[in-house]
Every structure is written in structure tokens, then in C-alpha cells.
Length: 195
Image 1 (cartoon, helix red, strand yellow):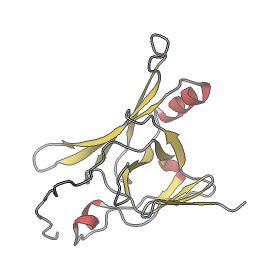
Image 2 (cartoon, rainbow, N blue to C red):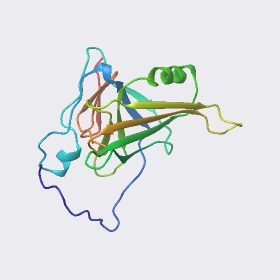
Image 3 (tube, rainbow, N blue to C red):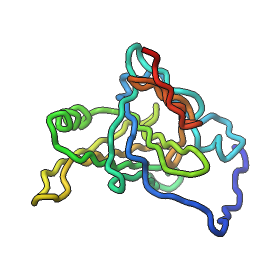
């Protein structure tokens, strides 16, 4: 393994937005033929935490969009495991603001599904997409819903995802095939499918 220790410095006045964008992308692993991986051996910090390549989907399958209320979702990680066996437990929380028939049906489908989720992070100078779920470990999805308790109170469905991984919040810079086009996660450019 390459020596990748380096200084982490902070510039005065540096722009550093937090949170996640309000659309995340997901697909059941059963829809994916090939899940990209972090390349080995790694020679740079980017190679150490950004997967290489694109998802190869089963015929007719794509990633789907999931709206998440701004300010109610996030990604995080924490260590998991015992001494000399530690990996990372990557987590995501996403909040859909309704308990409609379609939302409850999605909850029923996802509760025992093994999925991959791509989460875009806001940033002014670079595109940052995080991948939750990989080829090596199963993803756990927990879902809870709430009607709210008074007029105007918060309601909806909260999706909580836990994804064990050897990399903390691995980045994704490949393409995502969606029902209506392709999103290039390196540039952030969406190209609509011609009709």
C-alpha cells in the first residue's frame, strides 16, 4: 500500500457547505450486474476513497430518484469492528415528506432490500457523490413513518441506511443510468435520453 499520509490544512475563508442535496439515487443490488470498486493498489488519496468505473445494470434496469427534504438528510460514518479488524459503518438518513400510498409501498419494498444509494453533496468547486453499499457487504435499511401530530407539523417517512465498507463514504465519479437519461457524477451533467 502506498504511503498516503499527508497534511490536512484549512484555508481562511474557505467555502465548505454541509448537508446533502434533495435528490438521492438508489437501485436494488439485484438490478446491478457490476458494482465499481476502489482500485488496488492505490497511489493517490483520490484512488484511496473514490471507486473506479461505472455501474453496469441488468437489461432494462436503472437507478431511481428519491426526494429527501433539505435539512433532514445526511451521510456519516463511524468505525466498526474489533482491534486489527476495523472497517467503517457508513450511514445515510433520508426524509420523504409524505406517507402516501406510493411512499408506503416504497417503504414496504425497501425494508428487506439490499440496495446501493448514491448521495450528492453540495459543493461549489467540485462534484461530490457518495456511494452507500458495495459488492462485499449487505446494506441494512430501516424505515419509519409518522403522520405528524398537529396541523403543519412534520410528517413523512424516514429511511435509515447502514452500509459496512472498508472505505469511509466512498466517492463515485462514474455515470448513473436513470429512467430518463444519464447523470455524469464527475461533471454533474445530466443528459436526457432522446425520445
